[in-house]
Amino acid sequence: MSSDTQVDESVELQKLNLSVEIKNVSACQRHVRVSVSREDIDRYFQKQFDEIVPKAEIPGFRAGKAPRKLIESKFRKQIESQVKGSLLMDSLAQVNTERHFSAISEPDLNYEKVNIPESGPMTYEFDIEVRPEFDLPQWEGLTINRPEREFSDADIQAYCALLGNDRGDVVPVEGPIMLNDEVAFRIVASLDGSVVATHEDILISVRPNLVFADGVISGFDTLAVGKTAGAKFTTQYLVKANAGKEEFRGKTLELEFEVLDVRRVEPLSIEELSNEFDIADVDEFKESVLKSLKRQLAYEQRQVVRGQISALLTESANWALPPDLLKRQFRRELSRYVMELQSSGFSDDEIRHRENLARHDLMARTEVLLKEHFILERIAEEKQIEDDPLDYDLAIAQIAASTNESPRRVRARYEKNGQIDALRNMIIEGKVIDMIIAAANIKATPYELPSSSTTEAIELAISGDDEADIPEAKFDVQPDAPIPGVTNKKD
Image 1 (cartoon, helix red, strand yellow):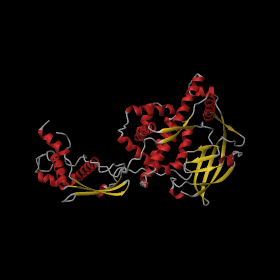
Image 2 (tube, helix red, strand yellow):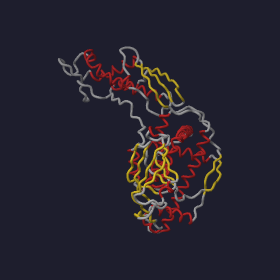
Image 3 (cartoon, helix red, strand yellow):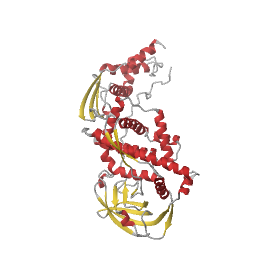
Image 4 (cartoon, helix red, strand yellow):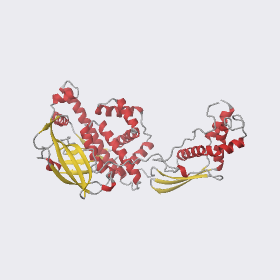
């Protein structure tokens, strides 16, 4: 390595002389004002010109032979954007490295409004969401109730009956609608006599409660049972307060259901279910059902226990969270919730049912869940609990087994959808919860078996689709972009 290269690297690694002012807007919001010294600005310009001078092409001079002052005058405006981008990225990185705060979002920074002045420091401001500062609650020695059950052969038979109904063949019928029939409906939603949405050919299992993504209809079975193809009926529909279409939030719509056709499920026997799952031996199939029941019990145990832990840990967490943060976190929590259901062996029908129910109360619970996340994250840091590649392999393998996919396909989908962070949170928080449980006083309570669902969940928002709520990046800095008139080949 040459001495010149060593000098260049030392310049590049030199810390910036920053002035950082931080204003606490709220527990999770900071307003930051950063000033970059004139010396640093000049140093960055100098570095850029050092790279340009040997390559610059100016009429009347051979490449790299023009006077430096002429080159600086000609190219200063063109490299200013690159210098600004480099200074911004390096100063933001330094602010983050120096741990002025623990950021949980990208800075809300208007790149276009940042300018390098002719003299004096470069100053810019931004808002950023941060992890709140708080005293950890007492988490060791908690008293927690946990559901327990020893599964019997009768339990296995009952669950097989549920599976047989979920996976049975659906055949068209001529007669009137019966409870649990699958019916294709045309749904027309109106407000004050004006149609606001029409949904064609929506397949619904007729059950007492019908849950859409933005509302609930109770007593749906009494409305539908006995109707035949071509019949119509109406009902009132209250749109939930956090529905995607803001103009319909809290409004009461009139829904008209038109019966298009009626279908009935012919349940599968245990033998047919065994073949459906490619398990030749019925006893072996029953053993796999037992394992599934145990996984679901383990999930319910974790949910019940976690709910108690969450309530105890967040009881004193009275700091407010920004609405935008809660809105973004809602989707992440929903994604993680589905991930946990998949890894616990629930059927697609049960996952859809639970997901739609969660949409109705998850927004209200998101604040508690986010506070819980911050607390568990702090405990993980203090106890040096970290993720491991094997943790991801195990979690992905469990999800793959329940969705009948290859682990590679599941991993690829999660990476493509940006869900690896959610998976990491699930792993870390799971380890912390396990540690809290190990240090807790556990009391056993009875566990009720899953029964025939009284609720049908449809992944449809009657009033319209949810709005996008994840902001785009504020700016895209490319400090190494080519400059016209400069040869960019390496010497």
